Image 1 (spheres, rainbow, N blue to C red):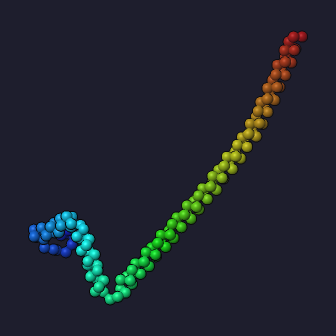
Image 2 (tube, rainbow, N blue to C red):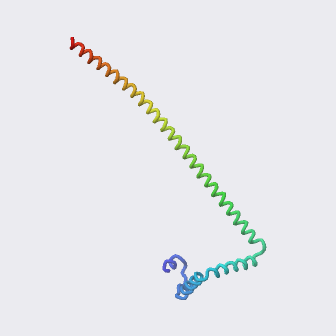
Length: 140
């Protein structure tokens, strides 16, 4: 309890106050139904003492506040959805660009491979012809 006395104004902290507080807490734990009934009784008493329509005005204010809160929540949800859609669209465009670049790279690689393969095949044929000519000349 030293922490509460340091942060709150000085309150007389006596053993009698602690005992009363602990006694109240134990009674609430032991009889929760009575506590609820007492709360309802106080609510009925308060409604009887307040002028007519006060409860209705309070309820209408609470409903209005809940409505505003719900609308704000929906607006935030829409913003989050739109942001997610935008991010998804941007990611899709980026992936499409990467795919296009990869496809172009693959086409260039295939063209180069055809050229190199053709050159290698041509060189191989030339080498084979030269080897056959050499063999033919050696047989003569």
